[in-house]
Image (cartoon, rainbow, N blue to C red; front, side, top):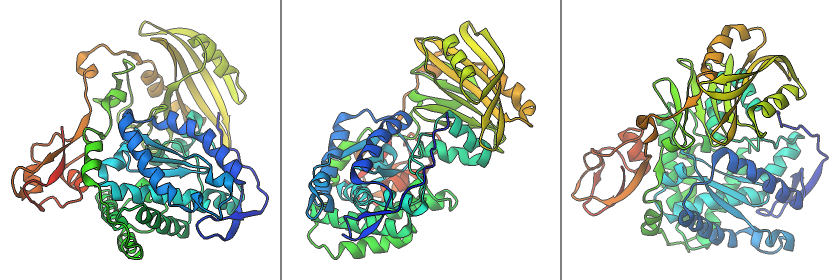
Length: 479
């Protein structure tokens, strides 16, 4: 179940299409394209694609315009590179994040789009990610570190992170599939910044606008208590980038387009924060209105929800529960397959009933690198799906948590209460300031989602909380 292959790689070189110089490379270009294509499916499964075709088409159009100015679409890049199609996706995640896979797959989240202020900033971000592809940074890092860790973080991998790193599980849950666990070097990031500025400027946008976005990232970092947001995890300090982005943009005076009006039209109505229709926590339970189920979890445990799984971790990292979809046509078939797979030693197997639903329970141990985990597992038939809900802990401490986990697993039930079913997400709404006033006054009636405050909304607007906004200025509020 843990698909993190470690493969020793031969030492080879390939051209960096930004600099034109040869550098260490783990893969050929064709292999990079294949890696990206295969990993794209897991990214979609983990995050989900945001359901707004017009917005997706808009991001693709901006991305293609930037891409046309890149080194990937010009000589001396070979024809196989120049003709490689790119895929640009908007992911359904509130995390402020953007990343690229080798071979032409670029992603931005709806959380990132909400924090941008215009097309020029979007072009800069997309140009940065295209730069990672053009610089072949993932292939270079894999070659330098002599390993390939492209794989899927499935349930077992998520549990291993829970057990090994404690509270860091929420970072894994937020960022989703860790397809490239090879941190880019800061030189790679600076190279991508330089490329992103050049590509955006040549495409006609004022890339200096990107500096304002990095100011927002710096504020997010400060708001989080100096912990680094996902987008910045391996990047140079955002304060540094505020300065260098403007300096680099000044070298390309051709870009003048900002494009706020069209950008605001496109993000008007975008979901902000967690989308309750896809699952939310409240009062010690997790509810999923679309799939119409609910279950309880132990007090104080941390919950990370994604399109692929719900991960619940004991706060000290000593135990974890995973809820996900299972393969198989029935709970019994899926449960027996789970019990029979390599590494699972089942001590108990039985058909059971959970709150009127057919289920199959398995207990035993799971062999993982470094030892064994105790496991209590339920496969559940419900509403045309088969779900897998299970708990794990180190074998020597499993008895400490098994009762609490089993109780939570057995709480899975139909969701029928309209109070939990009828939840709508909070959305951005673009409106013009009706009068000249401080931002906090204009936004005082905003309906903020959980975990968001006035400072958060000010950061989304790239203004200060008490900054005076002139009448008629478009601002982002929430409803």
